[in-house]
Length: 366
Ligand SMILES: NC(=O)c1ccc[n+]([C@@H]2O[C@H](COP(=O)([O-])OP(=O)(O)OC[C@H]3O[C@@H](n4cnc5c(N)ncnc54)[C@H](O)[C@@H]3O)[C@@H](O)[C@H]2O)c1
Ligand SMILES: [Zn+2]
Image (cartoon, rainbow, N blue to C red; front, side):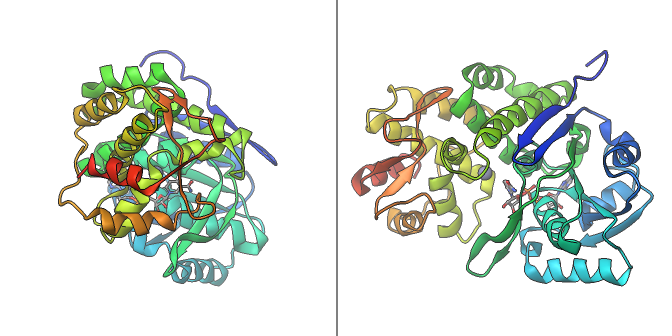
């Protein structure tokens, strides 16, 4: 990319709005951006230990940060009330007051955990998101949801607490493990499928540049995905209606994750979920035939699985789906596509499906 960087994407929410900077190399300006958005505050970075080590070793893009930092062990297992308590105790011990600001550095786990610390510390202090996984850049850092998991389920304790700014630097993705990277691409496919046929087509055409992690292609990918998610959540912050389309692929994906005890990574589960749900949409007559084949082809180009290996029994998946949050009155509900770039609206933003049709759709990915 040459010339001046494009202006940040603006995300609006109930209390205001915040910018999402998407530029290769932007994290070299972390200090200046922190001063701009958290000026006059005493800052604590909260980072996952792997990412913290990468940036301390000069291997996380051009991130520079000399201020105080707290770390937690990487991975979903850290998104707990225990880690929240440990981090908030540590901030208290170090004497952080109401005038603090938090910088969340890492993937979606860092964003959700550090965001929840920020939401609750001294009844709420402002925070910056600096996502370093593709999933966190194009999905988790937009929308203002923070929180932790409990033994009862994921994300059950949390708060809406939008960041003051998001700084997404695709240069940090150079060190991301391949499987994590490809998983993030599945969410981008979802964004194209639910809202933008041109974007979907661009992903199809640029799959090789994306897989090579070319900075210009990644900037464009993250920007367009952030714009789509921002547009959907700005219009429907608390999930009353259209925000449900962001759950495309996720009814099946969450069931795949739960039934496999989370051995299927989220992004791969989303890809398979999009595929099964496209098959369901075709079967219910909501989408033209051929939609699923096109989704399958783009996932394959991006190196994402189109069959669940090792397979799980449909009997293990259906109960996992029956507990989905979108369900009403005993039927399973799905956010289904009607075409590439458009969602079915026959019964509102989600559609009820009977068990035989759901079984058939699941069979298509087994
Ligand atoms: N708040 C939301 O709206 C929202 C939306 C989607 C997902 N999420 C949450 O996001 C979480 C998943 O996020 P994730 O997939 O980013 O997982 P993650 O934060 O656990 O990161 C995945 C792994 O990548 C490593 N890593 C991160 N950046 C790296 C880099 N640049 N180089 C090398 N390694 C790096 C991490 O150490 C970790 O091991 C889940 O908890 C999910 O619930 C939240
Ligand atoms: Zn997802």
